[in-house]
Image 1: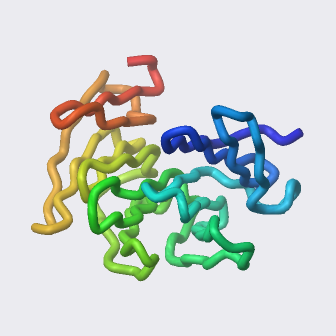
Image 2: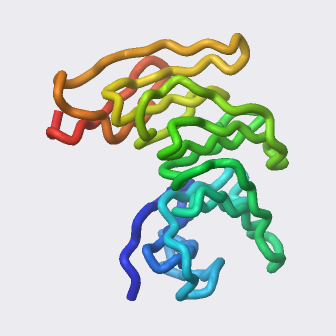
Length: 189
């Protein structure tokens, strides 16, 4: 057995990535497991995400690459290069045009179209990005630099917020409803 490192849930389908590099889907209602990658691949999967139609699975690797699997076929994955360090978090936007955003220890966010074509790189964090979620078609990120950033990709700007205590980094974030973002810090705040 391999240790899970990340989980993504889309309705009744969960995608799970492991330390050994295996990725699989789990039907939550039946318990049926389908391996997408070999059970013992070589590169750890650090982040995972399903698109809203549950046809694409994105896996963020410790090598800085993101692999995209088409869940309708058995074809080899498409590899998206670009990050210089581990892909720590990724997310598909839930609203059209269903962009993919990847975040990394290299302090930047890469933006791809729903067909996985590169759009742009977003810069601003001063340290490793620890978490990424999306609201509509814009990313929201937390970082070891102790900030939460809400990005406006249309206008090329972002808001900076400093939640939590002054000595702790923000490790995770999730968008709840239309107006709220919940963050979690390494100090438990």
